[in-house]
Length: 329
Image (cartoon, rainbow, N blue to C red; front, side, top):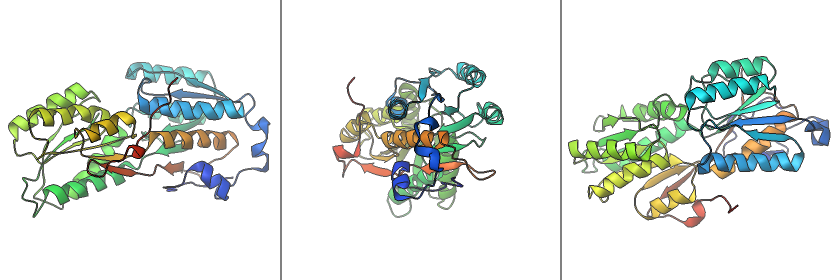
């Protein structure tokens, strides 16, 4: 039985199983481990490459091994998401896969599900409430690494203003909470760096564009923009281009590394991008579901965790192989 997968960065679950890193019960490979089992995936919204990619890989595992997999789409409606989660608990699946919009929204329900024997796999965005497992990015690491890069580009000796605009998706989302904390910890050591704006876009590209356009009007010597998700950061990057500042303002972003993002890196809309590769996350999530259905469990008070490997994509060294896309249906 697994006791912990904590910090297995850079090594997918399937590879760890093959290498013998993960131990499972002797009965784990039997078809009966999956027979009659049900998994419900509750994403913030479908129709975006990130969640579609995860669902595709988890569904592949369900079809291959004979367990039921269902998607219940919250469609960006947070009230509906809480209601969908409550209904999922009543339906008594074996596992609920939760894509948390904020650190608090589903915390009570995750605890309730686990208390009823329903395992919860959190994917990429983590609640304040621990559950059986988590697969996703290390947001603190990303925030730290991006901040260090910004300091090198905009800080002491750079000849730049040191002014930075941060564009989170939501201030209470797990990625924004952790990245903001890690970023500010770095910036606090470099007084020449000034955060002139830290406004959330609600994940909307147009709102990110408007926020960035206003910041540029107020701070024409801005050095960098750090958007917390590539899709809405496209709006911020376009504001930089529209202002004629593409050569002087660096645009940073994070995300799942889909083909649309690489096109915008190629076009100079985004300069530096920390990719956690959503396709790989989907494969890890699918393998984690299998392990959980086989009986894998964490140590008391811990979670099974697989940290997504990171790829830093820069416009000056961009390669199409660094991104992925969904296959045509």
